[in-house]
Structure formats: structure tokens, C-alpha cells
Image 1: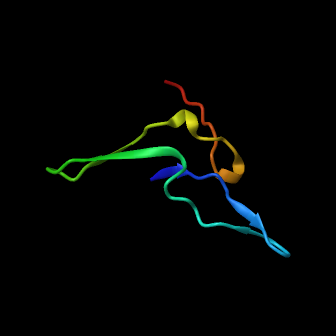
Image 2: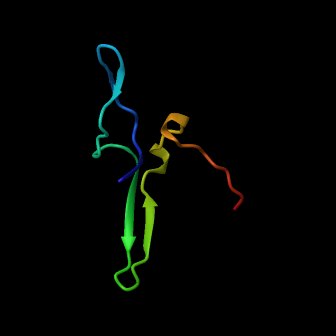
Length: 66
């Protein structure tokens, strides 16, 4: 699973159409860890630096105080 995918599209006769997402390729690969005892789940993003920041991808950088 990925946090976002780059938009893919093609131009038809009259309109630009979206292609289905390629589930094998994206940005922000997610890895999940689940506890067999209590069922808690933790998510980690393995390649945060690869995520493009753009409003069309609904991504943004949020600054926080440590």
C-alpha cells in the first residue's frame, strides 16, 4: 500500500481520462506491524523522501514543533 500515486492519464478523442492506479508503484510505501496479542497496528512509511508534494496529489508538508 502507498500513501499516494502519481496521476496517470491519457488523452482520448475529446477528453482527458484517468487510468486506473498501478497498485505496484506509488510513493510512500507503507509497512504495517500487528500485535497478535492485543491487535494493535502500527504503520510506517519506508520511503518518506520519495513522496512528491503537490495539491493535486493531496500531499503537503506540515511543520511541527518537537
